[in-house]
Amino acid sequence: MRPAFFRAAVALAPVLALALAACSQGGESPAAGGGGEGGGTSSTAAALSAAAGAYSEPGSLPEPEPVLTAQADQAQAPGPAAAGEQAPDGSVYGDSLLDAAIAEATNLIPALASDTSSTAITGQVYRGLIKFDKDLELTGDLAESWEISDDQLTVTFKLKDGVKWEDGAPVTSEDCLFTWRLMSDPKTPTPYGEDFRQVAEASAPDPLTFKVTYRRVLASAVSVWGFSIMPRHLLEGVDLDESPLARKPVGNGPFKLKSWETGQRVTLAASESYSGGRPRLDSLVTSIIPDMATQMMELRTGRLDMMGLLPDQWEQASRDPELNSRFAFYRYPAFSYTYLGFNFNDRRLADVKVRQAINFAIDKDEIVEGVLLGLGTVANGPFKPDMWANNKGVLPYPYDPDRARALLKEAGWSDTDGDGYLEKEGRRFTLTVLTNQGNKVREQCGLIIQQRLKDVGIEVKIRVLEWAALTKENLDKHDFESVIMGWTIPRDPDLFDVFNSTKTNPGELNFISYSNSEVDELIDKARFTLEHGARKAALDRIQEIFYEDVPYVFLFVPDSLIALSNRFQGPEVAPIGLGYNIEEWWVPKDRQLWTH
Image (cartoon, rainbow, N blue to C red; front, top):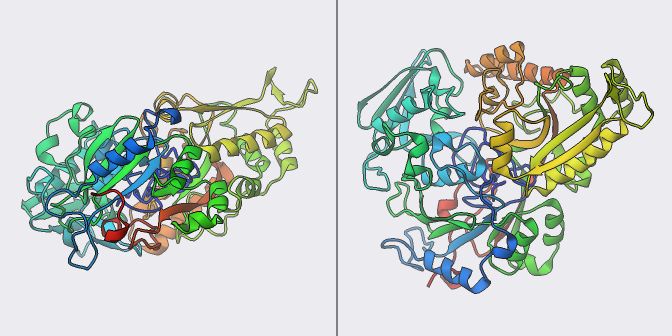
């Protein structure tokens, strides 16, 4: 999720699982909270992280006046809360938050939403039993409380009374039970099912009590229930691929989908029936603008309130006196990382010496300084440097082209014809690197990688593909050699979905086909314990293995870089990110723009 890229970092949504993102820098978004990258696209449903879908050409954007008129119409406060009306806490209702994404959502059924653009929206429309608060502590969401049995195997949730779905049906424990059955069913094409399958028994003793018993102690026994609860009365017995909820969700969150204009914009309207109280803003409007320069133009001209910035845009905009008079600028480490991944089904890349050589050949500091302009940190593994799960004893590979050349020679590659490129068995070492359209940072990373690998004798060809085509035709089908992508990082560290050897089926997240039996065992050790020291030891060892095994070249952890109109009151950066309290953001009556 996420801006498309920021959905995870800004944490606008309580999503807890990893998600793939198409954004620019590799960070997160204020709306997701687990899964993607970003770095340069905005979207509250999408600036507060990124994925893709049908793109509109920049030149086909509506003219300024029609857009403003349309948004003003869409922003009329739903229900009894009128624009400018005062809320009980002294804030006022009204206005809309306008942001942009480089791509749009693909599916709004939470079980099937595996990209950050989708999870950014589902995270506002749906709610889980629990969520992470601003300090990354678990707190109730649909649940008012929970209890864990003495043997740590059973969790009993007590749901809040009076919570309703958007269509008026009550939210009950039967919805939780249905969600568990759906997510644990092997026939459900979801990448998030594994933790749900650890439940041995689930029950709904009464409408407000939901009880799960695990087969063994599970570290994520509570946090997994931050996943969106889905409506039983609308999805039970329905083919998910045919459900209208894929584009017209019926949720229980602070916002509801008002309109989705394919390739143009998504509008979420405040929900009057939200159990946490009606959001102060009338709507969140995300325009699909795949070109970052066009997004910046829209920000400057006042047609966007929020944007996830590219590093060069940040450097210019944050120093611009006129923009500083209208926008607040936020910078903080994103819950995401960007990487170069290898297809282990490729015989050349299955050789660990080749992967190590490529890692030594790439200057990660050059990427951070040259592409991110220093607005990020070299990654040493799949976690943020400041996370407790990070093994600080594992350092990033140093830039050492001589060591890279030696390893390639040991692997049997040599320049036999003197043309500067390596050959083996009469074939030149030519590596095709895929990345997604609209992501300037990844494209720039690809150019640096291309040059550095050329220096050690590997020819690199870069292909930039539309997001949906890349994921469906290449990643899902394992039809690629290498790829520059990114992940958002779950708040509760779990490497199962991305690195376990069983998660290689189409639509699952180990699309590189990585397989290491010791890593599988250690992932289980980290998952199936509540003892912090044991989890830490297992995760530390995994990172040591990754250093030797090189499933990815871990490139960098970006900073989230966000410009937000200063007319909004309430935003603050917390350990979880920026957008955790978006329901409470508001605009003084005399500064409201998109209401009438």
